[in-house]
Length: 467
Image (cartoon, rainbow, N blue to C red; front, top):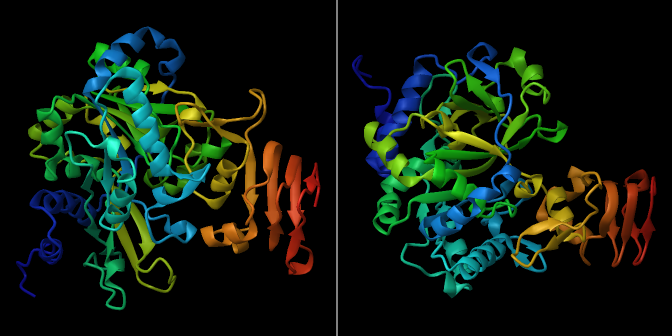
């Protein structure tokens, strides 16, 4: 190899061969150069201070009329690139049935259509798909032809090469070349909006604001009061946060830079010797819901001023090249978080929202809870808690050996979920199969003795400590 050889050229060649746009290549180069220079992406405690407080959504009702007026210039963008591989899926996670036989995408479509009818707004729905979720997701949306509008229904996120941890060369895995690539994190949203032409199309069609959220979060519905707050204050970027609890101690938290600006710090950006402090929910009190509001004019100006590269804080995730093979080489996945753009925009703000706006499905346990009567489908197609207002948060724990994958869950709950509306905790250990009309109340622990399969008969009532 020539001593003048640019170590990035091998990456550039790979990315160009895959048809990735020049801006995506240049964006990745910035992070690769940072990695080579020794930057880790860590944000230590001496660079930030705890955030003491943010406005509460309950106090923003005075902005609702302004938000209703602005809704016609708002677009709903759903991040839809995930395959649900952690639950054994090979297609878009948003195609899972979650309530009353409807999928995530069905309910998202119905939520948007309800808001259109209620407010007489255009309110388009646009997906950020990956190459692997695009075809199935667009086919599913075709079942809702009334969604069609003056915009394409989706745009594509990019992909980036994995980097060998030992020599920082492109990772190679001939037995399955797909493992050589990874998503660049949802911070790629801004680059993909630009390279796809979607940002230009939105602005030409008169759209000013975007509400962005994950497709697996059915609590994330545009709220005119929040939009009005943003529009009337000319806020360029607004992040929805919730109070942290022990259940959220590993999630990204919001903090304040020493210069006064806001910053999002993810777990992978915390030094190892500060992890206890990171997880102290009394110190860092707010977590990012990944529900974001973006002023598209402000985004265009920020991208234009930076030659198309926002240079969000890098997240260096160390993984194995083949996620299913712990003996495969160590690699770095260079990612960014879309919420970290909060430090790019001068005047960016955060607002504390109720927990019902953050209801993601990350595991089969989350899914079983949604299937159950502990959640109901509202008239506006939001999925809301059906439990008493003062009831504690429902905890569902399923044995990963038997319930981690969707097919395993469906095989053991063939008649659907048990009644959990009066349950505090529902824990299952071992290979347990449940019949029809099972009811769980209180703190329930179900076990299969001696590792043998167990059948819970139709109509069984499980109570506190019940096994």
